[in-house]
Length: 450
Ligand code: PFF
Image (cartoon, rainbow, N blue to C red; front, side, top):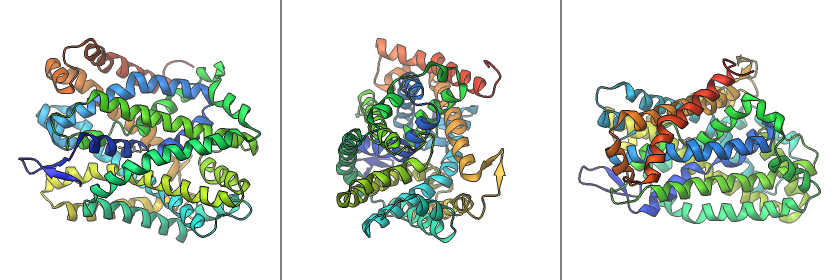
């Protein structure tokens, strides 16, 4: 990683901006474009957006600050952090769940990122001629194609963590993330010139109140908030553990949350006007990115090929910097626990992740007959990660910092100090976030409400 060693021989970010960029790299990924449009489309549009933003403010930012505070204070991995702050206490379950969640998410994330990588390849060699739909469905339901691209993406992620080229990733993020934002903006403006702009914007920004009575919309928004901000599984604890004490946290967290949310909204403005212009079902899920956008690019003519190329390149890079942070969670834990070198750990974990992903990569094609609770393997992995593991992990982190750790130490270590904002933050962690998370859980499984 692009890090110096501290006096305990542990790696450290060179600068605060290096850390912020790496955390933005982790947060901005497939979740902002694929996940956000997928969830917004399936959960009724504006109602989802409204609840999403409330979740970000009341739960996302406070839990991000909680993870940063734990990580920077303990200077250890997801599991070690809990053990250091509260030795012998059951809070460490939160850390183990994080390592487990990282494997779980890595079973499907690189599969979808592999599709992105393939699209990048397609645009590199001229793009789609008529329509991307048949090609996409044929490709994802195949065997060799999904496995090869999945492999390429896992290999890329592993290689970067292996060689410790955080320098490369950190530096490239500095250029590529603003570029991605700019690029999405250009595409969003283009999308607004298409016939479906009004309808697309109405879908995104004018809530229909009856969707607000549907508990699954709340769960989707909560899960998306955790996933998009990389919360609830110790990725940001791990990243913050490489941070020097003198770097301030509250502003860093605010800029990460702000940038991530902005990017998701702009990507919605890019996708939904196009969805309505082409008469596509907004609840089309994964197809929105892989079929709707290519249609837009075809509509743009020759320049569309360049747009397609740049779009999938940037999305691929965004996915890569997120996958790196996902891989880093088990790697940093196993390295310390088994006293292995970084390189050995990365190879073993990378291999394990590839193997776990194989059935998921094949779950749309040859293994599509395997369903659990009526969901195919990929849908199941997504559902469990978004809606169960991350919110549950977040709940533990929130309660831990709120109740399990000495209050004045928490306030001091978070850089909030004895301020009003600090007090509000503590109460958000103690009561508000846990209450909302539990409420959403209970109502989505039908224990309360209709
Ligand atoms: N935040 C990433 C995205 O939006 O694509 C995904 C992610 C990365 C989730 C790291 C969780 C995590 F720990």
